[in-house]
Image 1: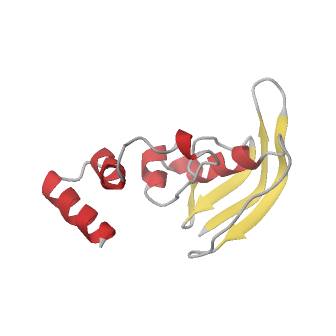
Image 2: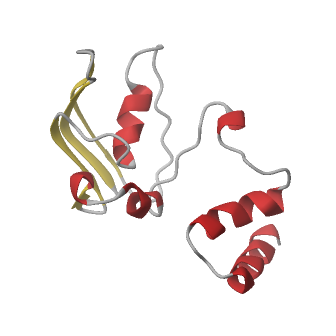
Length: 121
């Protein structure tokens, strides 16, 4: 579950991107965050995985405040799909792409091969 409680965020240049945002996303929910350019969509989502920390307010993932978690730990719990797939895909094949994340998490090659095979079947 992701819970955002009265979150504010101001960039170093003084731009207030988020002002009092609150929402709750339960496990298994699929959510689309939509709005005009500059509305704060990307800024909000970067709080879910700890890339940004609120100026004021709190963000919780599975009941734990994101201020207390590393980006690496949160990445195991929160998935993020970029608007432009060219910014997200790194490999030439689906098999390599699946293995890419597992390698980054330090899985052993034998387990990577097993999980890739499972995912593709």
